[in-house]
Length: 310
Image (cartoon, rainbow, N blue to C red; front, side, top):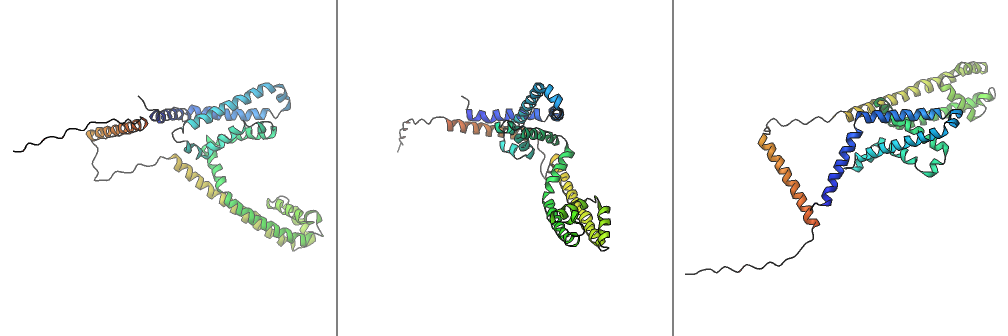
């Protein structure tokens, strides 16, 4: 009689192994990548109103086919982690894929055409799973967010200070650009990209020659210093993301055996296999005894042996 509790891990291992063979195959990755590109092409076709109205039923059928294919894909990826389901949720890409697929089945999201289009557009980002360079860039962007927040705080403070100075100095002479704090911030934000810098400097020189110090110092701090700091943060994060990707792809090197350790012989290998088989048999026997009902039987006492004395 086989123990159902002992068969469950075996079934999970069999399911996980079969699903892992499929998901790790190169044809599977190529097929999913082609489906993602086809989904992006269909989204582009739907932007043309004439084609969308003429092929409405066909486009809807294709969309349902894509949804079914992506659902089967995420089920296969989840089945590959049947032995350890928690490992599936530790991968951020698995969580992203699962969220994109599950949200497409929610009724209140499917009724909103704008949200549904955004969810379908999010499927295109799944191509990063199959493009290592794009995956490195996305990871680098995520790791650079803390440094970017600091950059935004410093940049916002710099914009506020120069906007207040510009409003104090140029609000009466140039109300179109410095008439209020909001206009001054918008003007300086555009100047951060060096857009219209020549016109702004000429307009400032007509007001005062000292305005050249205002614009020169702002361009120096905003366009050169802050932008270079942001580029440095992104490049550092990119190097860290590339190192993480390389360490994840490269297998862990095997630890060398000690110099004085004896080499395993054929008899030692066979003996270890027998010991492992005996341990598995003992584990199965313990589970079977734990699941079997306990029967108490009375055993007769053996008569005491008579000793012969001389």
